[in-house]
Length: 506
Image (cartoon, rainbow, N blue to C red; front, side):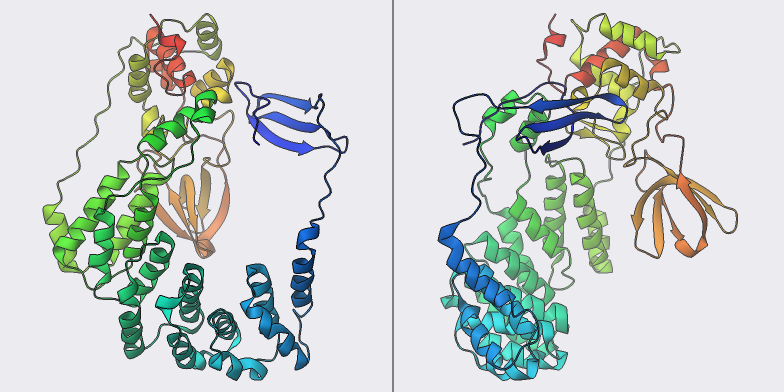
């Protein structure tokens, strides 16, 4: 049974541990905000004695698993006979331990037996082991052995194991030739779509990889199908939690359909088998999905899917998509109402501490945009993502912490969002946020307000790379705002996006 026994706002938790005395210790603070250490003990009739972690009911199964784990090393021919019956054990942990034990034995001793095995669970595990340890030239024989499985007659878990076995064969041994791929498409195509989301995830990946001519149409039909979004009932917790509760509740109210997003993600790699109408339908789905609420990085992930799908489209398809897509509408931010003034931290703190009652939520939202905060920061599900999400700043910052971060952003720079200064061998200086590193090249975003402004620098050309002492966020952003706008902005940020907060009552 779950029970909420401690909460406070703000409570910026940084660490928690159970001490030798049985008490719970936790710390709050971080990034130069107020820090504290708390000790929590239990007082009541319940026993606080340590629970015996031994599970006697599982002792026999643990013993069998350990026998298999003891064979995770080369052994004699008799080891094969001990391992083989456990490849079809009902407990998956024992099955997997047996398969790993098999992989440690000389392949020549069990290769033929793996290819001839007829029991589906044992055959799947043995063929996975062969894909991991065998010669890539064995791929046709492994595919032939997998082809003898009656896929339609397998349980859902067995079918998933079989599909993942196919995937592993291709990961380890390469893509099959055109004839083998066509035969496998013919074998898998009647199974798709299935009634199980889990099965559809694996089938879609395989059919896209094998260039199925029907997978685009079938998957698009799944994307258009109405489905019920399932989510955990968290209403009680969300109402009580003044921090992340409101943000999560709003996301759940307009959340994306995860299974459909997975299918769209898989479909991005399909190069062939599309019609222009199907391509348009696919990108329309991505555009609609981008309007859903899915967290700080959500829209960036959708954009990455779109870009990779465009890269896999033909020139004719890309031209048709451009011709039918309306140009993006420019975003116009409101102007500060002013008159502004050079604000100091003490002045803002004095205003905020003097009381935030009777503030204007809409005015705070407008000031958030007028000061250009919205360009880089998300708040209540809206805004950019190049800076930290500010929705729950009230749970971490006091009025002084907030004022300092707004007026002197370089005083404390988050290591997650800080800029770097790069000097190249030819004397060129680049300042920006490192957003990618593939081992050979780093990718630097040079404009926090425009994620498309990037520079790629070969690592071999870098003479110096060090953290910048200057924040990407400009100083004195409040100086264009009036006193009313500053107060409305502070109240807006401290509200976590709740327009019904008492601060906004007349």
